[in-house]
Length: 226
Image 1 (tube, rainbow, N blue to C red):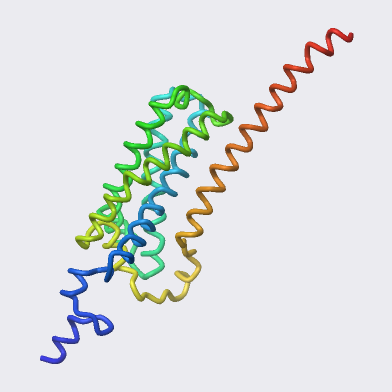
Image 2 (spheres, rainbow, N blue to C red):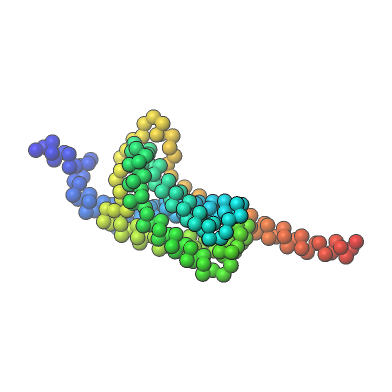
């Protein structure tokens, strides 16, 4: 009997209680929901921008470029959640199946809202990567996507689903061997990645526009002086 009781406990916490209150209080639940949403948002942002870069460089039509960006958003979104599970010791197939079940709804919500907002902002969809309108539009769209996906993640976490599945699989794990080399992605680090990505793109776009304006201004004057 005692062995059976121990089997249903983890570090003194009953499994039934853990299923009902997986994160203890509302504050912990909110923080976990924000972290889960940020993981998805980072992957979506990297995937979308990389997809747009590839599509633009390859000369793809705007529709195919959007499809590529969405596919890569899912790929990178899944990847950021899969790595911690691999580090915890899960096999790749098992880790990926858990992540697909946990994060698909969150990423899909983000992609729907993100693309809808970009479509509403005048000129954002047609703007190239080296364009201030694109980066400002992307910042607005990703912010809206975060706030749309946050309640989805919180709802799933509250019921022990969604990102809770990945959280349970790497809780208290101690990676050994090569798995130690897999990097950790804290919430702060992910936020820094997104902000740096956005600011970097915006700075490059502004520099390009300033250079273009300067060339347009000085070109005619040089001809007149000649």
